[in-house]
Length: 278
Image (cartoon, rainbow, N blue to C red; front, side):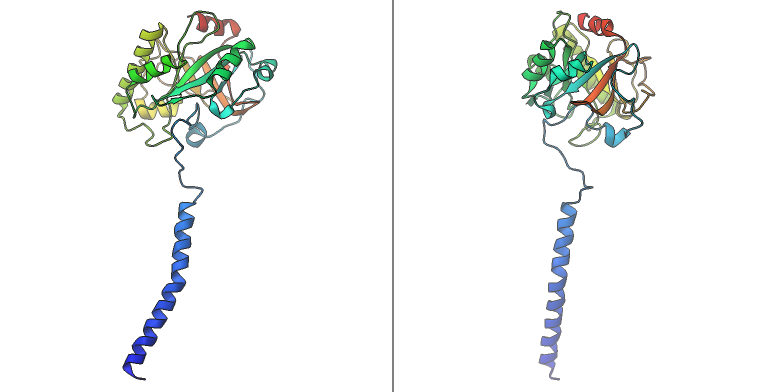
């Protein structure tokens, strides 16, 4: 066989082999891009209370139906994900208090806030609002101001609970928002101090023990002033963060009736009213 024909034949074989391989490589890249196991970063503003609990802490046996614990009062928390909430349905099922997401960072306001905040009040509930913290975007004080200015205030009407700081896993990036443990404690202190200066109330702190331990070093210094709202989807509340000997509220499920997130207040309705009154 002439040499030039041999080279032409070999080149043709190589090109044919490459043509066969290219679709496989492209398919592999597409599969990787569409891998359902890959972490999907949500859009800013879409975070909600308890967003990271199932992923990081899992779910144990659930307590069962609502209002099953004597001496406790059933409540719910909602955000824009629930849209227009059927408050009468919740009231008739025994729910007596609610928290509504008002803000996130200094860039998001809940578009359903009026229906949710006023709707819960109108059926007779004691209600409050919460702020989803993003400590990597702006200072604690700036976020406290944004919160108070956009639905997070407090009034002594007997029906308004102090605002809550939702501080938990970062759905948009690094778990602890790129902060050291001492840096996180300083950010939280900046928020709670500013909130109290603006409203006269110490805000509730919502968190999970595992996140608090990892990201604050299990700091116990807020326990004497800030009520604890603990997240644990199980039949028992389990270990609490350092300093707190009891919880005020416990988010125990994300799959409860009507809205998903259900909570127990650690006391009867008179204790809910006492927290509202300050």
